[in-house]
Image 1: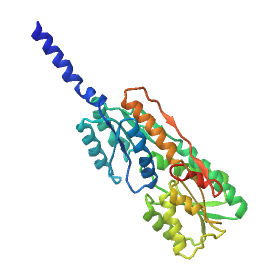
Image 2 (image 1 turned 45 degrees about the vertical axis):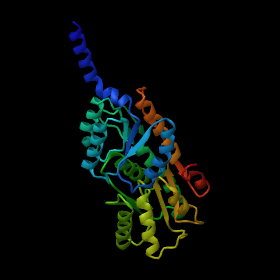
Image 3 (image 1 turned 90 degrees about the horizontal axis):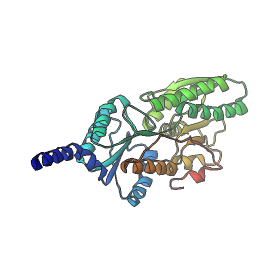
Length: 313
């Protein structure tokens, strides 16, 4: 009888081992698409000491937008046995479904960042299409004030590799169609990083030199467009031009603050706010507490309030 009870206890312990390991894990992992996105770096920088205060080490990776690399990174975290929760921005949601299932089976809750997919416990979300429409409202107001009903060409940095980017672009595009019907909108792609933004703007200016409005679903691409315009001879304070993007970092703020800057505004999130929400969600998940979706909305960043958006504020 004792041997039977002992065997039963051993079996139960063996079956529950992955869950026990994750519950005792002293690390949490965050996976973004690439280290080239400064906003993500700012978020991670703020999260690290906050998580340390809660007793957790922060693990990160750099898949450089390679789907398979991100999957392999997650598999390594699961195998390690020290990770108590994972949060990730998916390079491809479908590709993360199997590894998310593996994490769940190992007792490791998975949280989504700006996306949801099968198996996640909860996500930090925005409303990307509405966010894009809100940006379009501000752009349309400037177009009306500056050009009235005259035709205006708009270069819209575009990327549709995932829902966040696709819906932001869609929101900007539809919003401008509705609020600025005199705008002729050109979708410029690919434009996933600063170099591609630079090249896309150069091509647009070559084909249509009278393109005075450049917009983006993020901020790296718009900085590329900004440099392309300056390299082509456009002044930093040329009143004909309007550049704006979604997301904002200290570098963007510096450009927006230039008197009369052609980089007129952003529609972005405070990195400190994002980091704080991520930390709270990860810690709760790591401790086995119930975690629900959290929704954040971006704010308008202008020369008047840009100072308050610097990282850490």
